[in-house]
Length: 485
View 1 (cartoon, rainbow, N blue to C red):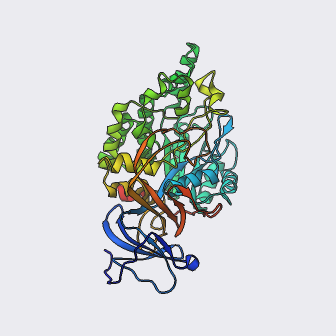
View 2 (view 1 turned 90 degrees about the horizontal axis):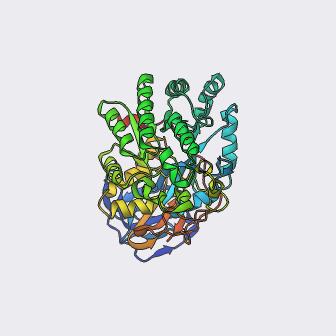
View 3 (view 1 turned 120 degrees about the vertical axis):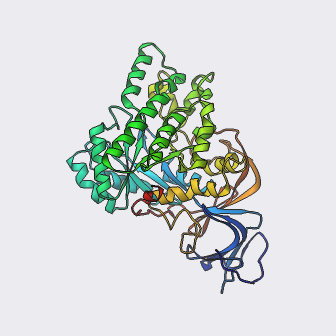
């Protein structure tokens, strides 16, 4: 618990006695972590939290931020983004500058993106390519997962070298047949190699063979409009791949992480595994909690705006996902941010949904949406909110204790929420570099008012105040997933 000190409280808005001192006090905020709730002052020095107490006093010049009436949370950690990604004949619209700027303005102060190598290419070479994409552009701190689109002797030899670079998580696709998809034998090889070197494996859980079969069937029947995308990606295909991935992980004796879980059918597989003692973790995304498959119907080609994999599901299943978050079967909320412009990119698929680039913009909206539709509506407690948007992802993916919590010695990555601040999500105010918003018109009740990355104010009232290239690459430690076993 924070220590008690009797010193007068500084009041006022943002008072900078000497902004370049490297010292900052955040006074009078209500602090919420995954485990605790308390009122306290935070003393920040050289980008780190150095004291948490009832009333701190700092020697020398100090910048003072009055946080009375505000709620102080750990800066958000989004462990699933795709910036500057070559995909489906184009490149995602947000690069590491625009993507991390949107993240910062929405309260997210750390992201983990995906390196996706081409088949036959060295994964280490691919890592250098992604490092070059981010260097000098990212405005908040970042790390990488490594996708493995094949498994052979060369890949096996490079895995320990990748882990030594601080890339301690790997992703396999059980979908995208003919492109990214691995078969069961390759997947087992990845699981065993990752376990040997202390890394965590995640999966995109959709049965690629089922999807390929349905896509051909729909095409043969002339059903190629955007509205048919979800029919080609049924919940049953996600549930089957989730079940199979879990069984293969159990055979390998390895932990498993399910990305972008979208439906109750897949959630039931996770629940069954966890109830028998298997270490299976999962994330969902704001779109699966708040949007539904009615957007694919009656919207003509506008439906392409929400073409993603997995697709949006039935509205009736959303409460099951919220309950999964509350009960701890789903540990985090990421975004799978992969933005494409509606004009010039999504419309590549006007003749067939098979050519619509999959993905939506979301990294800048995640925190505000989860606060409004989770915390403010009583679906998540404030501590649960801190857990699913920051603490749990940081722990699972080796970012803790520097990231994801508010503690002495941790990075001063903080987001100050104003519970009374109202707003509305709109393309007009979005920081995403894309020509539409997937959540256009969503009302907000409670918003990020001030965001700090390592003690630097990077956003104030949604306006970016940070610096291009200030984000640092993070060499992550081994996953802390075992704490959930």
